[in-house]
Amino acid sequence: MEIELDPPNGITGFPLGMPAEAVKAAAAELGEIRVRDEDAPDFFHPMRILTLHPQFEINFVMEDAKTLEYAELWIPRPGPEHITVRFRGIDVFRTPALQLIRQIEEMGHTVLHDEPSYWAVPRLSLGFTRTAGHEVPLDTDGEPLYFQAVLTGPTDYYDYKLEERR
Image 1 (cartoon, rainbow, N blue to C red):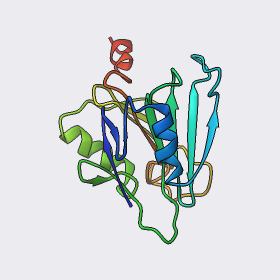
Image 2 (spheres, rainbow, N blue to C red):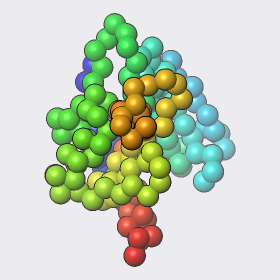
Image 3 (spheres, one colour):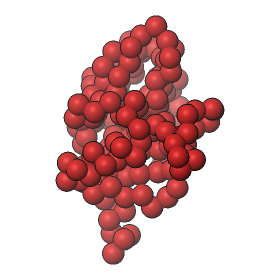
């Protein structure tokens, strides 16, 4: 299975702005789904559709409970399927994290690293984390060698971070 990150448009099969009912139906084709805060979403508790595939998870978020606002994918686990998550041809979860950041910068994008283990790409709307909840290979800096999750959001999702730097 190939999943392409296409910020700020979404991911394969799940364009941002997709109606919530369509997200549920498409996500159910990938695995078990769990829906939270569907009836009473608010700013702090947006509607979420967690998709549980035997080898990965995707968290789809609808802040207005109507349309897909952003998607967060977690690193695929070993198993029978070959699952690849790509951004412009680069394997996001099999390319060492710091190498991936360099490649994104070489594409001309600004990458911010304002918090430990977290990177954001404003204007492109990608966010990465190296935080792991289990044993993973570590890089020379003591952090996980590979990113553990990636978020794809709308055009201005991380732009506030640029304003904070001024």
